[in-house]
Length: 149
Image: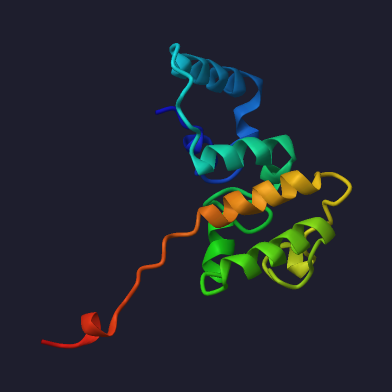
C-alpha cells in the first residue's frame, strides 16, 4: 500500500524540510506505487495530507506533531467527548472564520486566522471530515463488562 503518512508524522518541520529534492523523491516513490492497478484507495491520512498541502494547512498543522497550531490528533483528543456533528460544525466555523483563545499554547492564544477567502467551503468541509475521521473509534462499555465476577 502506498502512503504519505511518513511525511506527516515526523517531528518539527517535516514537510518543509523536504525541499525540492525530497518532494521529487516522494513523487518517485508514489509513481512506483501505481504499477498498473490504480484501484488502491488513499488512506484518510493521505487524503488529509494531500488536501492540507494543497490549501496550505500543513504550514501550521500535522496529524500528530505540533508545529505552529495544534496537531489534528490533539484537536481530536481535546474534543473526544464531543458529538461528531457538533465537532464538525465547530471546526468548520473555526477554520472558516478563525478562532481565538481555544489553544493558548499557539502564539500566546492568538488563534487561527480565517480561511474563508483562501480555502473553498467544499475543501474546508472535506478537511474537517478527514480530521474527524482520524478520531479513534469509541469502545462501547456495557454494565455487564463492569461487573466483577
